[in-house]
Structure formats: structure tokens, C-alpha cells
Length: 265
Image (cartoon, rainbow, N blue to C red; front, side, top):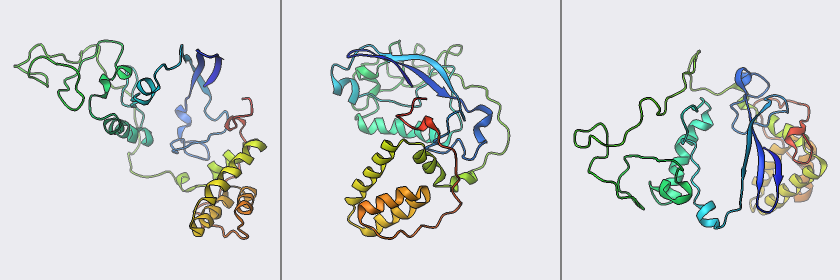
């Protein structure tokens, strides 16, 4: 997201998406990797237009704390990919809101209410604020011929995507590479950013009361970057690092300015 304009009351930014398309399974690291740090240009950003807020929140709890983001809420024309992380979140986000906001009727909280007429057959439940007429909570039904139902012509329809190949419960071989992504990220940072990462690791690990846990972290940091591991070890007063076993050899990639906050890109 590229910042376009900001002041005390207005925030506007250009929202972009990285479209992988045919390149989804190409490259040294699978694009399905949970926390993909791709080098700039691997998946070029495509602008989706300006996006912003015209005013700041007046009531933080009512307008921020109670917001219920749910990946399963989509409009006609948008569908879900086979991204395993997304498939998990389609369930977990809904489940999270049920627990966090007290029940199944969180969509009736003002900040979560749709701006267009919206109907469902949800009845009762904790925090039910509506008074739905009739006794039928399903359709079609002879007991409620006027029950609201999804439009056959304008309602949601899945995108007719063509699929080919075998559907298997497996992981790409690149998922065994636990360090190349972290290495690419670290070497792409500027010196102040790298210093900040080192300081953060020293601070957090210094609070760990079990020495073998600190040693285990250092044994993995050395596979990411030797200087990073040695600086953290020095900050913790650890004289020797015993590298952990690794399934595959980490890859050396060119630094990517897109991964740095301080480098214009």
C-alpha cells in the first residue's frame, strides 16, 4: 500500500495486490509459503485504486475494537483460491469473532452492519437485537412462503475456475527450507534495521530463563546469517554456538529493497 496523502483527519493510500498467476509454483520458494518474503519483481504489484479513511475513529472501542474482519465475507465476483492458509482462515476468523464478540450476532454491531439491505435466517442466540417475524428459520418452507432467500440471478456464485492435476495432501519440497526466507529478509534490511532486529532478539531472549532455549534459537540464527547470530550471542554472553541440524541447505539470494521499510521502492 503506497501512501498518497495524510493529515490529522484524512488517510488515503493506493491499494495494490501481488498477482502470482502462472508463476505461483515457480522460483526458489513456493508462493504458498505461509510468510512469503518475495524479492521485488517476482510478483509485480497491480494497483486496485485508492483506499482510505476520511476521518479518525471517534470511539476506539465501538469503531475499532469491535470490528469483525472475516475472510469468508465476499461479494459476488470474488472467490477463494486453494491457498491453504486462506482455507484455514475462512474457518478460524469466523470462529474468532464468535468467541471474541460474544456470540453469532456480531454482524448486528453497528460498525459491522452492512450498508445495504441484508437478510439471513439466523434466529435468537446471544446478543440478538433484531425481532424477526414468523417462525421459520429455513427456506424453502410451506410455513413461510415469504421468507427472504438468496437471489438466483444476482446472488453469490462461485468462480468457474479450471483446475488440472492431482489434488494431494502434501507440502512442496521448499517447505523444508526453514532459513532462506529469513536470510533474504535480513540481508535486505538497512544497517539501522538490522541493528533493530539484533537488539530485539537480544532483549527478548534475555528474558528467557531457560539457557537451552536461548542456545536453540542461536543454533538456528546462525543458518540465517552468521553475523546476526554472533551479535545476538555476544549480547547474551554466549561464547559458542552449535548449529542445529537442517533439512536442506539455505539459498543465497540477492537482497531485495522491497523488503526494507527505509529503502524507497
